[in-house]
Image 1: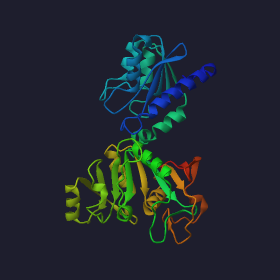
Image 2: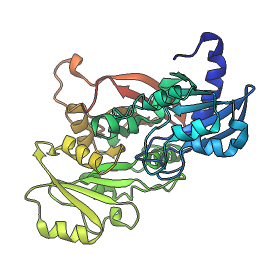
Image 3: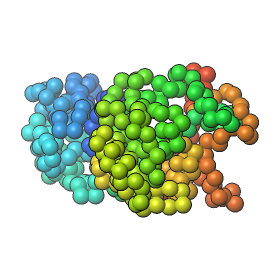
Image 4: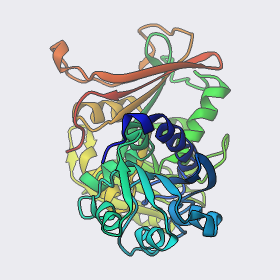
Amino acid sequence: MRAAKDDLSSHVRFMRAAIVLARKGLGSTSPNPAVGAVIVRNKKIIAGGYHRKAGLPHAEVEALRVAGAAAKGAALYVTLEPCCKWGRTPPCTEAIIRSGIKKVVAGMMDPNPGVSGRGTRALRAAGIEVVSGVLDDECNRINEGYIKHITTGLPFVTLKLASTLDGRIATSMGESKWITGREARGFVHRLRAINDAVMVGVSTVLKDDPELTVRLARGRDPARVVLDSNLRIPLSAKVFKEGARLLIFTIAGAGRAKASMAADRGAEVITVAGSKDGVDIKRVLREIGKRGVTSVLVEGGGRVAASLLKKGLADKLVLFISPIALGSDGLPSIGPLGIKRLKDAPRLERMASRKIGPDIVLEGYFGHLTGC
């Protein structure tokens, strides 16, 4: 059931409150979705909750616990259709039915093909009114990684680029620290914190020796993924530091001794098929998807960016533009794409921009069905 027009303004207001709560769980709930819920009585929010971490109570249960007996006869607003199956926690539908909630307003249906619609049917069978589709686009954006992963097995791929006005990521001598300001770098660290993994090519490791951790924001460190077809990564590289897991992707024939030493330092070395661009990037994404990674932030370099774009595997672009120019002798932000016709060029949709410190950040989604 869709929301009636006369109820829509109230539904939107309370769903926005649930969305604010859902965002608090970003980066902590994977492979589960981030979900928020509020309980409303007499047009006032009396309780709220959000899913804090996989294995902990879901948002609906958290909100019901806060509301207690006051939940009876009230309305529950939740960003995702309540679950109706056992996982690490009991079904939320059972808790909702027991509580005496009379109406459930869901932002989006669960995209999981095995359960979609079942929670709604269970609630309606118990006599509870269910309204769906309130701010569903916003609710979808919160869980882009969960949706992509549960429907395709692949992670949601965000390509992050930081370039000059003329699209360069380094000088002709390779100097790139720092093209963007500290504010932009802090934003990148927040992106790391809400993604399951951060990916770079080995050239970035060799040139910049990044830690790929979260230091300029709050949140947990993502898994680190390095594409290294010939196992050139130094064993002294900072990505070997203790903490989040390290996945190194290489191709058959790379040195076994080096792979063994990397494994001894805590890395998981994974062999995949090769391509003319190095490791087969789609096979890499499938392998990390199998390991529960629902979202990946790709930070470098230009060759990796080109590989993703040529195969239509990037879902979203976050582009930081610095107010400087380096000229044609600077290193381009994206490697060769082999495009001969404009209609074949990757194109962004749903774009938005804003200023962060001295830089501009442009965000948009690539206009194709990616990774399927």
